[in-house]
Length: 175
Image (cartoon, rainbow, N blue to C red; front, side):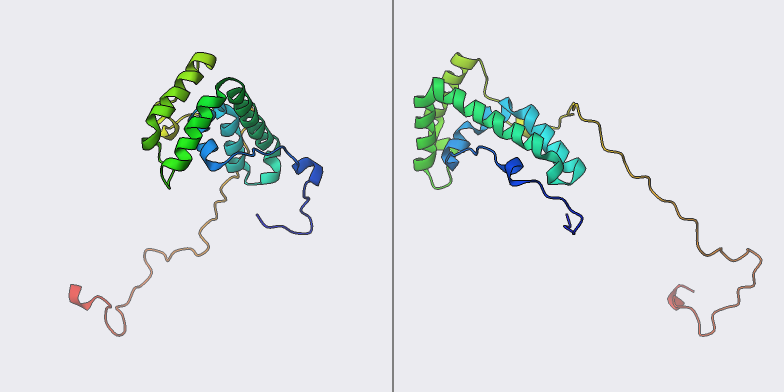
């Protein structure tokens, strides 16, 4: 996006949103359930960004994603705080890459707490990489019509004389 003198930027008050003050391990621990619970808001935001190619037009959708994530982590903190903290700590300290494979036991405890309290299942393997058709309340942007230009130079008539090349053919080995 190119910014010119005619570009209007949003006011700072419009940009101020409460941020998620969580560590990478905590975000990674809640990622699967968060992605499932905030899927609709996140899809709307990504669809807006992709279609409009202007981040200013998608600020409301971005705020909805942040709000959904805040609500999700508040709910988890109220009901499954201990299990979540154990799982996030395990991810943080078990390996340098925060691999899930080292923390399957604490993951199971956290998933059981989420299932018991909210009746939310952990998404199946590959759920987020499946192709999906998104139903959106926003109308699709108008597509630009492709401009078709007529051929600028008319071809030679069929009966126009075509003498042989003056210095021979470029493809002399084919003759």
